[in-house]
Length: 281
View 1 (cartoon, rainbow, N blue to C red):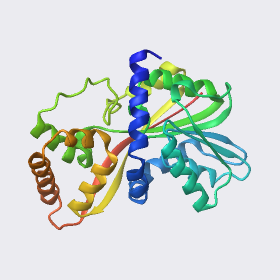
View 2 (spheres, helix red, strand yellow; view 1 turned 90 degrees about the vertical axis):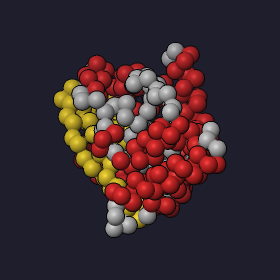
View 3 (cartoon, one colour; view 1 turned 180 degrees about the horizontal axis):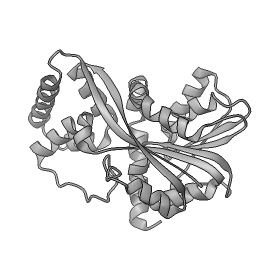
């Protein structure tokens, strides 16, 4: 990996570790939000019996833990770049009594596994953050058995993800931030039509399919939405940390106004739209 990409990876690791308490706090809400995408990933890879499955960029443990619970004699290797996120995943496994799992902190571009190891691979909301997406896909291809299946979920465009743009757009509008290059890691990097399919094909995968799905982020109130987003979303927190108190309050109130306008009944349940891309080796 190029030095510039290695630097991005180390920054990401530090960021995910730093914000792991927020992910732990809001784990229930986020898992509910992500459930349709996780369910489609699971349906696509069809885990069963004695399968050995790799879950990449698993964060607090999903969909890996749900997959492990479906296996009679198999196991799941749950991986993430950030040790602190895996600590939460271990806690979740213990609480659920799931024992057929192993945890490994590693970089997707340098997977510490032999060729042709896994029957299937899951990756929920990881690809858009990988510094080198093609290298990541090639590594997944390498460790997957011939005939094995892979499925990943990525966010679709900003126009379908108000839960991101309500805060992000308001910050950008007020602080006039320079947008990152389109190829830089970020929420909507994989939203371009056919991008993930092309990456999978370049990596060697075949029989690709793409499914669009919607999840619902049930916040209840604008206040809960604001707290959730600003406790898990590192880029937004970084931007707000560079604003003075007056600007931060202005941004907050404008976000509240946007959310309350969209949900006049006061029941804030925000759609999130994603693509699930599946393929096989």
